[in-house]
Image (cartoon, rainbow, N blue to C red; front, top):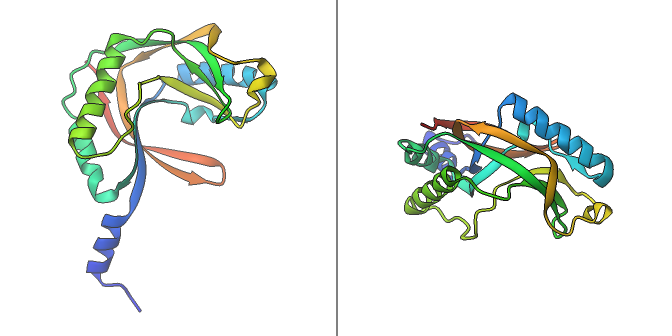
Length: 191
């Protein structure tokens, strides 16, 4: 039995995508981040985040019906935040979910403004997102042995990683046998 076009449209509208807004490093920053994670991996083990998927999440939205994606793309237009630099200068390991990450001791004002503006627009558009404090970080390792390095709390990174943020993206995530696959479906430059 074949589906008619009405059924196909209803099915498309019900299809969901897992999405989030993020900062995506340029190639040089991604290579530097990956090199640092490889060094940590030697001590902590676990599963390395692939170089091409390293990012810092701004607003995690979660599963969104496909017919609502254009609204997310529209609400991001017109954000007037200046470009800025971020300095990932601390690392840590969350024991509860066994994730090793790079964080920052001081959040730049422009980053706070960008995250706050995006979160506000996403909520105003009727999307339900988490209401917890923004803690910018980059996941380097998953399923790692935090106790091996004694990383009970954040520690200064031996070599801070700085990257110039010139834009932000909307990303669609899908799971595969090799881990998460990310597709950038929207891109907006900063001032």
